[in-house]
Image 1 (spheres, rainbow, N blue to C red):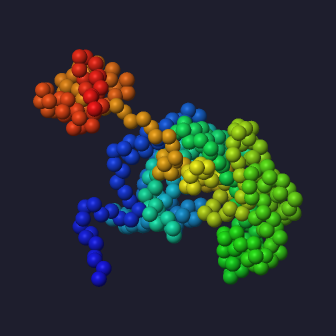
Image 2: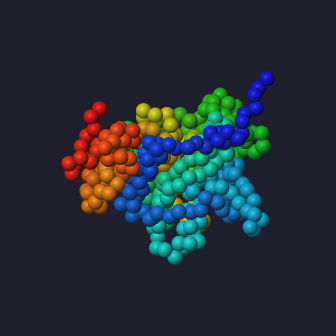
Image 3: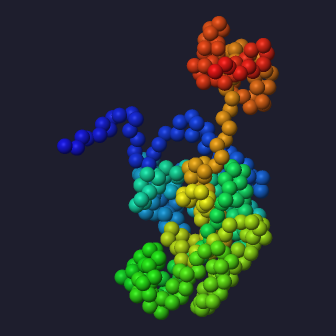
Length: 381
């Protein structure tokens, strides 16, 4: 007989929610600070949208694509339905369109914070997620797309993450073909076939677009090879500007990052429902976990491009940040001495025990040093 879990156990948390203990929480805070500093140095101004918004505003427009991922609750004050944000991009778009509508464009904004999502199949454990990102609102140019990707690369490099790959896609091309050429069961069949990369099923269900879709499926790989293959395909007039823009984006990115690892996947379309142009997924070659994603979309009526990095993922592949050395000091220590230790990179721990037992206290509190003879002295092991 299966035992019923003790829901009163204080150690039991809802699935997908975890406590971060000192080492992890410190690493996340310092990693986020490093990333946000890179964004700030390039003129991206930080904003902080609320965790909760009214459902009618948060999940309207492009936010409607996030409705299935959103937790909802009733506001006891207004008796209106509210939703916890599953993503911050649409909130930044609202801030730009409403609160900062009179600010000069291009508008460069950055953000960091937690989001809460309803777990998707295979990712049920990821319900509280942290995000750090940037949005460039105003220009619809390849150089703007390249700027966003270049800053993402710089932020990851600052954390010591090497061998980063940027995987480019143009989901609007696939969605355009699906919406114009398929309906009902045929539409579901071709979406399923493309999602599984099932060439036989694409040929069976692709109708008039079968050969084009198969050609796009084959044009996957390093950017220069993928673009060459795309050049051999015959696209309808409405899709040719997207192919040209993809080519321009690759050129603009390489102009800023000549050694960047760029790949192209023209049929990567799931999870990109509200995007209107080039999209990017970020990976490190020694990890299978997605470090970030972003792309071009409409912020209200304005063109915009953004990139969201996932701290829970990039910190797992970043170089470990050196921990502060801990020095036990007398509780009455002069402020100038405390300041000098802090400037030298020490964390000072004030002794609350007997002065005759400070060394024992220092070991007990995991200190590496003790204040002795007016200087930090390493503790004997």
